[in-house]
Length: 567
Image (cartoon, rainbow, N blue to C red):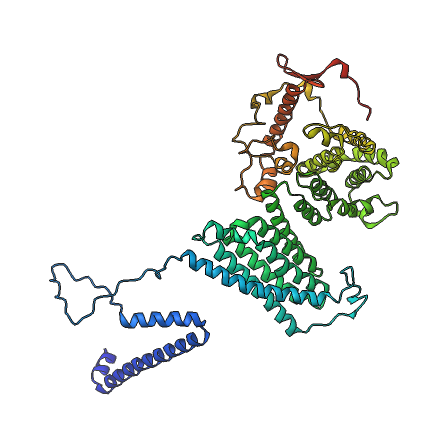
């Protein structure tokens, strides 16, 4: 009790207590004023001019119409009479008021943006022209020097920064033009302007590609600047992919190209290089899903497939045989065949698996028509090692398995050669082949195809998959197999799959990874049913070589064709 008596008997301490409270209150007030001043100063110095103007408008609004906190009186309290001197309470504004933009305003905006864009684009073209004029006539650099004009002019950091700022401005102008011309309120004629003037293609060529090539020729001095610009361009393309879906096919391919550029300059960081390789493969794969008949996309994927020679072969051959082939792949595929077919031992022949080496060499002989004396040997070595390789690979063999099958189909089609007999037969009307070399190549390819096709005496089994129906290889509720996606783009499968067979919203991983690794047994049974279903359809359509007995549920051939194939 002594402390209580002490404090009560000492009024001096009570005075000090009140003094301390007053000082604390004063301190809080002073600190609050200082914080408010600092925030106001920072906001004034850092804010964008438009942002500051918008903030001042909000401040004026808050001054003219102060916000009153709502108060609910207790029940039974009479409502106070409104005072004529008091202003009416301001209504809470949920969002800024927006006014619809007229067609005239949109057209005027697009014209203004395009005028500025053309000026900056011309400047960028001039810069690239002046810088590349120091290259030799072939457009290549020899030890960073031109064979005609001497060493290249070295650009300092400020000059590089100025060029990056110039190209960044051009990208922003393209961004503004596309957003304005593709505005939801834009008329159809205004929306067509971007395609009419090839704006996406111009953006890539003059705004990104030419400058990247300029930076690439200046490596390694321009390495950091090239990374910076690739990141800038990639961010812009990703933004356009989200906001301007009308050209999403172009944006996906551009994103794949930018990721491939980034991969190419990451020589020191292997992990980062593989990350960008995966990013590039992702975008090219999505683009090929949207346009499965476009050959050059498979050519890009073939380059990214290194060092997987068998996967490279699949993509190269497919790029030559789809509905819109990429004929330049005939030159690119030689970079795969030449080291493998070389009589001189080289690193690629050393580290490639034997089964992969012999298989790719066999296709190299068929494609080039050279070293035909080694064809049978390569085939025998491949067939000798394929069984053990499959046994060791187990379910990992699924993807390489259908890659091999599709590559063999491309070989039967003559790797896109229009004079190939099968390619001629697939056309309407069919025309006989007049090319002796094409016929000889077809006979050699048939040996490989028959050797790699394992019939497993399916003609002796009952056709349990025949109930799937004549119009589809299975119930519509089933999902496509991974090889179904790999077959898309070829002319001979245009009418094979039902229209609703492929769903656009299936993710890439779902197509090639999850589908391949889940329900392996059920997928195996589905593949067996698919083979039997195809056999029934072939027997019904042709009936000359293959027949199906519906009473015995057995496959067979006509007696005149019951011969052993000389493989």
